[in-house]
Length: 185
Image (cartoon, rainbow, N blue to C red; front, side, top):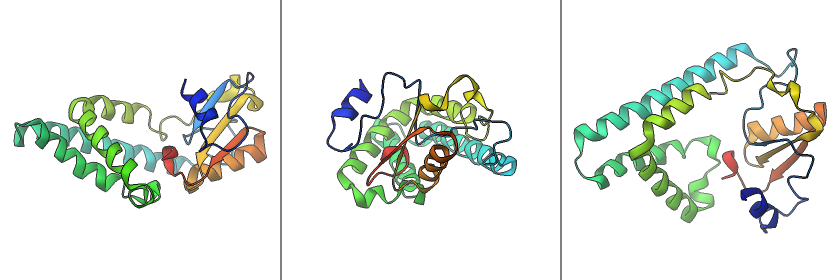
């Protein structure tokens, strides 16, 4: 459903993002490697990423626990998460989303803060197990590169570079979304 909506959206003024032959769709995400000898694999970078994701997961868990110690009202719990999310989405990774699209930013932070007030342990757990630093194995061996669509925001320097590089090296279908940062925001 989301892909059908994206294909019809005026924001995506390009060829359809998926076709009947698409088997794997990556949205500005860590693709791992197509081959064990992939030169884009960097063991030290994976360790650093794993540690950073584990630290972020610990921070999320700590905030979740502290919201029950320091506040009794739901609005106060959400407020703690708004501070965290405002700082998080202020990182360069997100390409100034608060300035590029303030209304979307405000709505997104409010929605995600409400969700984190309830689901933070789940998010922390997923962050730990799905960390790009842990998921770099060549899991794509069963997928033909011509059946992969990789979509990244043009303002997401890391993943737009990866998408272009994979298109050049492996022939994947790469789409870049204008005025979008990480996670297509």
